Image 1 (cartoon, rainbow, N blue to C red):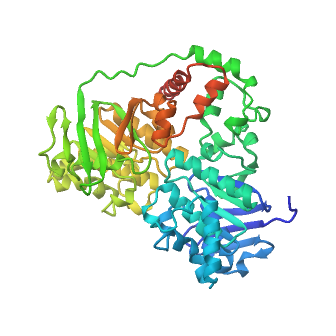
Image 2 (cartoon, rainbow, N blue to C red):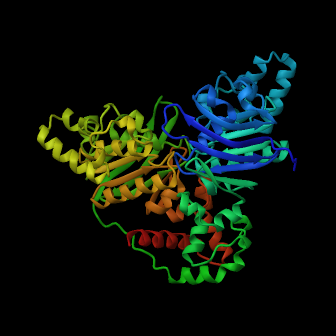
Image 3 (tube, rainbow, N blue to C red):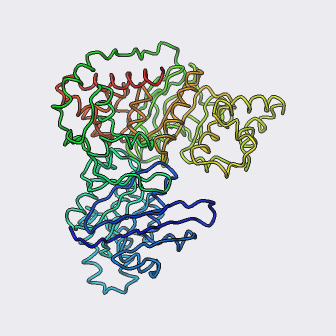
Length: 569
C-alpha cells in the first residue's frame, strides 16, 4: 500500500449555512490509493455530506462553513474548483437518470472527452474500451432512457471512468435496483476495482448487499462523527451496527438467535467466508426448537384478478393472464424485476388504466364500471415518493384534504383526522408544516391522508425505499398495526428483507406474467423463480446448508416466525 494518503481529512468540520449545528464534526481520516471503502450510517448521520465534500458539491452547490483541512493527492480541495476535482474524483449518483446528458449511450460516455476537445478517433477508441469494461459495448447506439436500471448504472459508471479519474465515489448505488441487478452492480464495482486499482468509496445503507464482495474498510458514521473504521469481520462481531441502527446481515442475526457468540475468528463479515464449525450444533439445535406458525388465511376474498391482460400501446403486452385472489386482512408482497409490470398492476386496480381483457373483483363484485373516485373509496394507493402526493403546506390540511373534497362535515373531519394522526404517530405534529418533517414522517403523512378515507385495501409502492433500518422498521411495524386493524395491505417492493420478514405471501411477476404465488420463504429459496424474476437468494438459505440443515426453506420460514414472535412479545 502507498504510504501517502490519497484522501486526508484533518480536524475537518462542516456546517451548512441553513443549520444551527455542524453536520460533520472534527473528522480525521486517511484513505490510501487503491483501497475500497464502504461508508454506512443512519439517515442524517452525515455520510452523504462527506461524499459532497469529496466531489466538490460542497462548497460549490451546497454552501456552508468549513474548518480544518481536506486534501486530495496532497492538494487542499479549497484551492481547487469543481472542474479540477472532477478530473480526480468521479461520482456515480443514486439517480442515474439525472446524470445523463447524451442522446445515446455512446454520446453520454463521450461527454467529458468532447468537453476536452479530444480528437474523434481517440474518443471513439476510449469510449469503446470503457464500454467494454462495463459490458455496454453492444448498446452504444441505444437511448440511456430505454435501458434497464442496471444498464443505466453501467452507463453512468462508464461516463465517469472515461476521464480516467483516480477515485470513484458511488452514492447509494443500490437504491433503485432490483435484487439481482444490485448484486451485479456490486460485482461490476469489484471488477473495476481489481482491473484498474482505483480508489473506490461506496456510500450505502444496504450493508449485506455490498458485502457480497470484499471491502477493505468500513467506516461507520453517526451524528457527523466516524465511530468505527474496521473490516467487515470485526464490524459484525461488534455491537456497533445494533447501537447505530444499521441492519446487520440476516445470517448474522440468525446466528445470534441461535445464541452463537459472533467473533472475529468466525470471519462472519461475508457469508462465503463464515466458518460454521463454530455454530453448526447451535443452529441445528435452534432449528429443532422453532415452532412453525400457522399462516393460513381462511377469511373471504377481498380482491381478485381473473385472466387480466394489458398493453399500453396495443402491441407489446405489459401484463398477460394474471390471476390471483387476496383475502381480507392479508399482507402480500408483489415482487419482480424493474419493468415486470408491478406498478401497472396497481394502476389497473385503482382504475388509472383499463384492462384489455379479464376482470377485477372486489368482494365478488366486478369493478369494471367503477370510476377512479369510486375505487378510491375502497382502495388507497401510497406512491413511492411522498413529495409527489403532498399538495398542502400543513399536516392537518393535507390529511383532511380527501374528506373535504368529499364534503364531509368539518366536525367529523376533526374527529377522523385526530384519530388517524394518533394511529400514525403524528399527533404531536398536527400544527406543523410538512416542510419541517423528515422523509419518513412525510411518508406517514401520505399514509394518514389515505387511511383517513377508511380504505379496505392499502397498496404501497416501495414503502421503505431510501429509509435507514430504524425508519424502515418504524414504517413496517406501523403497517403491521394497520393490518391488524383489518386493512388488507399490498406492498410493491424490491426489498427482499421486507418481503421475508413482513409478508407471509408473495406474488412474483416476470415479463408481465405471474410465475409464483406462494410463501415468501419459498420464493427466496427457489432457484428458478429467483433467476426468472431477478431476485436474490437469501443468505439464510446458504447458512442453513452450511450448517447441514437439509430443508433450507423451512429454516428460512422458521427464522421469520421466530423474529415475528420476538417482535410481538
